[in-house]
Length: 163
Image (cartoon, rainbow, N blue to C red):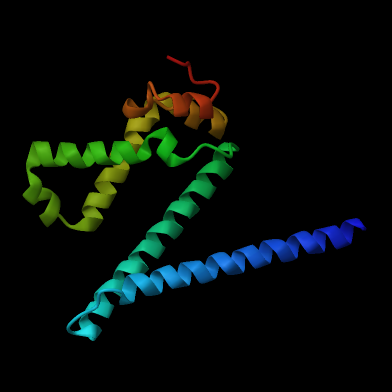
């Protein structure tokens, strides 16, 4: 069997698997939207389809951020979660609630919150990346409170001193 034939067979098998997974995903979404529906179907389906759409948008956002992050760092296993960006975000949220109260977090304009949290995350990373020439070095040498002793972080970034 030639290489071209083997590649076509592999491609067909991959497409078949992707098609099967797509059918399973559609079936799971349909089950989520339809199982247990009682009462006003229009209202319930509207809520459930918005939930599904939100899950899809969140999944695409996480996938894109991971791919972009891995591209910038040149490391296929390094993700924002391993670096601790998600934990830093939760820390910022917790500090806002602790220092200013929960009402502040819920009543502040979301755009202002986003800008402030982004600024805090960038500023908190700045001291460790100043003077670094390569993007990989800058991200790998980033200090992050929750990731200091993380074995996953040390494995993903060999320049990080293991503790």
